[in-house]
Length: 151
Image (cartoon, rainbow, N blue to C red; front, top):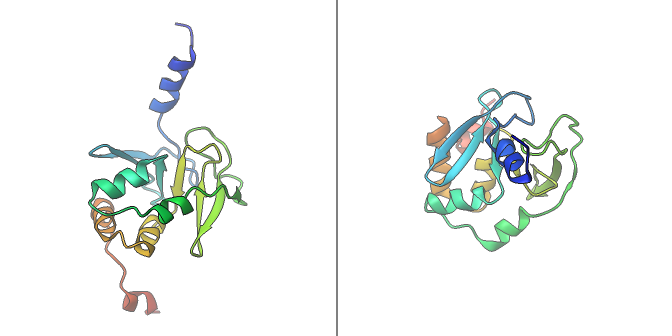
């Protein structure tokens, strides 16, 4: 079998995604039309391009345009040299949304969220139904203000 560009694309996209932080294979979780790559070790989440919007819409929340536009920032190369895109191995770029530092593939393949960063981001934009779904999916309970201030 010779490798054509379409064969190569299929092989690359069917490989197990590797966590940008831990460098181990991630679990692929399916929810309706959305696939979420999840690292059980660090609890990080990789969302391919367009999956965040699909996840928000599928769970019944709204994805306001200003929110989505902020996620399209190019950013700068991450100082964490080992953080690579699970799709193309490019060094992830950092960008900031309301003081929350996030990571994205410079080639536009998707977004990386460290543990609880996706829920924090969604909280900023009022996507409570999506937050509840993610908390249920990953077995986490929402943090209240009083829990955050406990020593």
